[in-house]
Length: 321
Image (cartoon, rainbow, N blue to C red; front, top):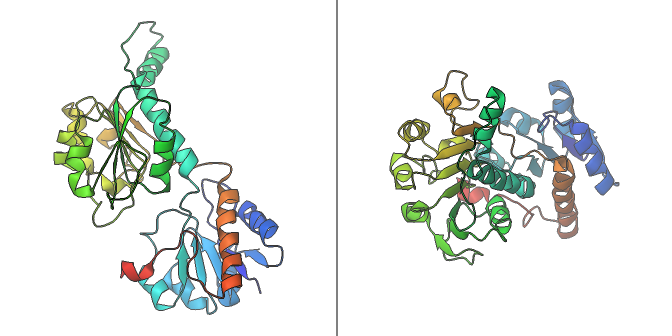
């Protein structure tokens, strides 16, 4: 029976066999198998030490009698049965950091696209209109990043050289940060006030759910461009629609929405200053390679220490009770 089971659900349309191959290259002494069907998954997990995939439910957990680690292929973990994992003594790790470079590029690219009027240019191109339009400078602006995990840090790192004022909002504002100002979540109004560009890169928690509501949107500069690469529910969707209708914000670029997927008749589709992408910012051809690096290192670490604690990207399940 295999030591490591890769579940059948792909990430960003990339075949999971690529992921399995990357794991085999890094762990040649371990047997890695892919469960291509629900029945195959149930059979394979029985004696597996590690299962990796987008999700796992309590029924499959019940089949995995020898399971010590579930390695999620997503950075977020709010969709997982945390209590059941904790009760069974199964460690949980995430794909945090795998997305950092590409999501950061998405955010900076989104800001620059709206600053330089690329959406306007595209509309005029479709209509065959050759007409000059006004654009904005990104340099010299105030930029706010909400959430300073791996993605937030990658965004800030890529702002070097743009000559912008950087402001961050994080859970522990006392921590060192390579930015001009640092605020706590309770100070988000002060952080976004005067910011021309805001990025949401925080996890979805009780504290961040609905964080960007009508009041916060009204605290933003009327020309502010909001980019959400966190989770849809971090933003109050109805409040954002209202803000766009009344020009309380200059525009929005949303890789995540609430609800998701966004219904075809939702008003957000119709705003000329709103760009929507289908939860695609995290895509990179190097996704499985980076993820396999993390999982393989954790397997080796557990083998050396004899413990499934202290792993890279490990979630503290006790704090999520």
